[in-house]
Image (cartoon, rainbow over all chains, first blue to last red; front, side, top):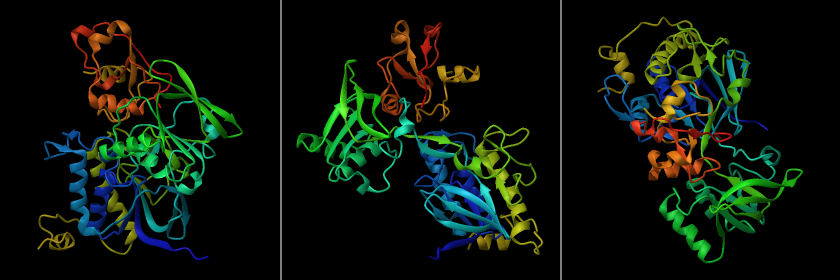
Amino acid sequence: MSVDVIKTDAVIIGAGPVGLFAVFELGLLDVKAHVIDILDRPGGQCAELYPEKPIYDIPAVPIVTGQQLTDQLMEQIEPFGAEFHFNERVDTIEKIEGGFRLVTDYGTLFECKVVVIAAGGGSFTPKRPPLPAIEDYEDTSVFYSVRKMDAFRDKDVLIVGGGDSALDWTLNLQPVAKSLTLVHRRSEFRAAPASVQKMMDLVDSGNISFKLGQVTTLHGNDGQLTGVTVKSPDGSTFEQPTEVMLPFFGLTMKLGPVANWGLNLEENLVPVDTEKFETSEKGIFAIGDINTYPGKLKLILSGFHEGALMAQAVHRIVFPDKKLIFQYTTSSSSLQKKLGVK
Amino acid sequence: MTVMEAAVKNSVRGIAAECGGACSCATCHVYVEEAWREAAGEPEAMEEDMLDFAFDVRPESRLSCQIKVTDELDGLMVQIPEKQF
């Protein structure tokens, strides 16, 4: 079986503000980039954690929200035509002749000359409820995402949560599951009103059941769930039989596979030099919140600076025979041409 | 100054505050002691929404990034949950 390999100069891991601006700095130096992110859209923490919160410390921009900053960066890097791969996580990085080979959890293969890790606080992963022995049931009875709906066909399914993920999967899995029960701690939902209405209709028609409460204990053996104990708001408890549980409690940041890439780490951060922002592995760079060096500040502005210097070093690797002449976008016609200035 | 900021600044363990106080992660969950519940106030709608992403939520649950420290709260006692997530 032949597998398509995506070949490019640079792979940027993380589409947060620093990863996005790295596209710009690399693009000015003719370095082509692909960007991979675990989330389904660009912006990283800015989009996931505080899309509507104002940021006050971007130079010359007195106030900007996380989403606006993301949108404006996407506009700024548009001329460079970077390709984005969302909903994917880089699992392995392997050294090959002339660069690196990367494989994502989706099986996508990349071959590139340099890797730029701009992974911020790590990858966003679903929160694991702190229920005793929950790890014994993971991937057999407890799932944090749905990759294949068919895995839930003719099963008794329990969904826990009140946000969009909980509601969307309630609606999507109801026709497939043998039975579906939604458990949420209160009768208000933070999900889209239309989804909430559809869910209520399914409850009214007897197609699903909704129960108020919080799961406190899992029951079962050998990884097979038989039921859960639910604590009602009034403090009483009841048993809810189920074969499968899908808890949706939002996302949290975990370092994730970065720890397995053979790089030196210091307290879950990647040490770099402050000239090139290169890691202990030549050709692998780390910029933004994921890196550390004497005096490091976790600021978006610092990550932008790191990206600019990283790009200079990357140019020497990608174009070893070309001399790099430093230019300004205000005056260089060749840079302006790359930016599409008319 | 919020209870979360005061805790983080003074290296109090058990408050993760992953989002840095944007009311968008529910990892600074605390239980306000009964005597202080009125002074600390009730969560607003956005905070109540975000508490859906916390575990073992109780009537005395608050997100500490949303409790502003005032003179009335001098002596405030809060408990932290067994785990933030």
